[in-house]
Amino acid sequence: MYQYNDFDKDFLAERNRQFRAQVERRIAGNLTEDEFKPLRLMNGLYLQLHAYMLRVAIPYGTLKSAQMETLALLAEKWDKGYGHFTTRQNIQYNWPKLTDVPDMLDALGEVGMHAIQTSGNTIRNVTADHFAGAAADELEDPRPLAELIRQWSTDHPEFQFMGRKFKIAVSAAKQDRAVLKAHDLAVRIVQNDKGETGYQIIVGGGLGRTPMIGKILHDFLPREDLLPYIEATVSVWNQVGRRDNKYKARIKITVHETGLDEFRALVDARYATIRPTFTGVDQELLADIKEHFAAPAFRNAPTEAFDAEYEKNAVFRSWVDTNLSEHRASGYSIVTVSLKKQGATPGDATADQMRVLAQIARDYGHDELRISHEQNVILPHVHKSDLPAVYAALRAAELHTANIGLVSDIIACPGMDYCALATARSIPVAQQIATRFDELKIEHDIGHLQIKISGCINACGHHHVGHIGILGLDRAGVENYQITLGGDATWDAAIGQRAGPGFAYDEIVPAIERLISGYLELRESPEETFIEAYRRLGLAPFKAYLYPEAQANAA
Figure: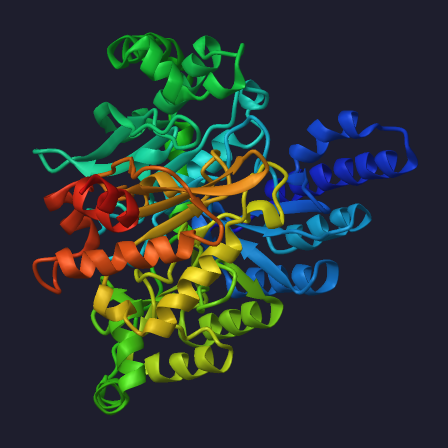
């Protein structure tokens, strides 16, 4: 992964020094909260329901063990002993004291981490496929490109105070694991018919109160044209995007109102002006960055110990079958560590658990970890011969839950337990659903099913693209939960369809149980997943299970 040079270290130290002075002025009363707000947002500090919240960037989801140990230190020393991994491949600390935040930022700086541009109307943390550099279906490692975009966008003078935030994702795999079409702009590394590698540019995706699926702005962009083309795209939106209404200021609205063809023409015109100013320095920088992402020295080793454990240990076998993915190197696997133990808060990890993950990565994982947008932790390079030891270490830390892609592997935002914008609780609903289906012991029989929960219309829980989406709203002071069905976060991205009236807080879990029980009756075979059954049958038969009384009255 990228290692900070002297310029990076000096830049970060100066930013942290400036913010320390700003915090001191706020505490002394020389800055009001309104005056302090834009300064703290530039450094990832929010004011939530109960306390400040610090959001730390994990660019393209990649960590070294020393960085994970520093995240554990922050949780233990300056918070309440845990951190929350988010759908943006960040980590949030929900209880820091304002006086401690500068020390937290300095500690992060010592291991090449920061909280810059994790908030505010700027280009946010660049995300990527969490299997990047390891996936068997990958054309190349997209992280050098993500790092190039990160460096270009950090403190970019034109893009610090835009109409709204701007989110970029990068992937190079056949399977979309980065939710590309839900981003303001996405870069997909592709090959054309001539075997040349270039970039497909997707623009105008986004969730929130007006969910939209991204559209292809450019089908094949040569490598050397990428950065000026992205700059042209963001620049055009920054100029023509609406600023009269913050709810209509995102690029998805601009593309929708302007029209894709006209927007493309504006980008092309701006690109023609910008392109001559890029003299190849960006390509030289990219070449240097790529050297930091050399593949580990994969080893050859026998796998008999793994094979034997797999045959004799049914619990280990279940974990392997559920939590492992194919690696591009022979003898290796990608391990997804679930942060979704049934009844736990999705995405939360204690300081002790972070340290265990760091040690496992150091001992067995070529010192690499990843954070997924699904709020889990990835060990991208684990040799099969080490999997029994890895599983034993995870089990001792209660990180061995075998539920990746199943009902209890729920994405959930912090909701009304923490967030000042939330209108309903998300975490307790996720906990109750996971606990209920664990009691029923039918998770593995149900198979692949993505449930995503948001506590307000901002959709931080990605409910729009869940196979089952749950949106918590406020109805006259009472929590009300809407259900959407048929959403998809893959390359075949789709916005879920609202099923009907919402459910009260104490009704939502029974409704989900009826829905999934109905699916088990409706599916053609155990191999037909929920989303496949929904696409085959449509909304009506599922709706009948959600609203049995309405069905009975209609009869």
